[in-house]
Length: 161
Image 1 (cartoon, rainbow, N blue to C red):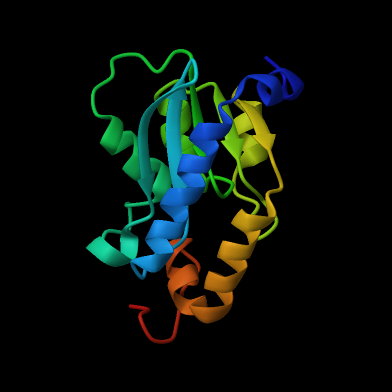
Image 2 (image 1 turned 30 degrees about the horizontal axis):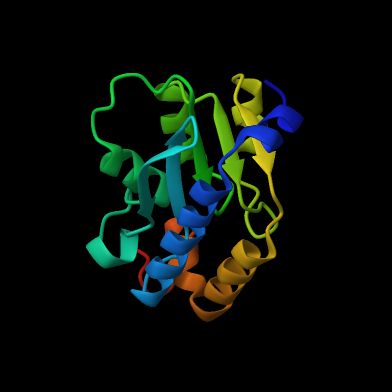
């Protein structure tokens, strides 16, 4: 599978579900990153970053989506949609569970681990979606320390330990 084939196959409805989840997270006071898991155009689960809401540093959008999907057996044929390029932790989960295709809303505000995913055989499509970038830019400007904490770069200041 290559990027162009993925562009033709991914479910736009599943991607929109990820965007809706990101918006819901922001409205709930959290980091605006949403995710959706689909197989063959069927939406299996959605999730969003709930690190702020639950005080759980591992509650990223992709991880929450996988938790919501529960035990689905095999991840063969699934596509993980996420509004932002996945971080190292989420990329590790993608590879661990054998998810072979990822659609990322954008990578402007955070580059994530897209090259690493590709090096592990994952096909990645970046949509460069302005809505996703706008949500993240707004959040990063309003809550820079929360964002730094989310990606593991907060080393001093309020909230740092």
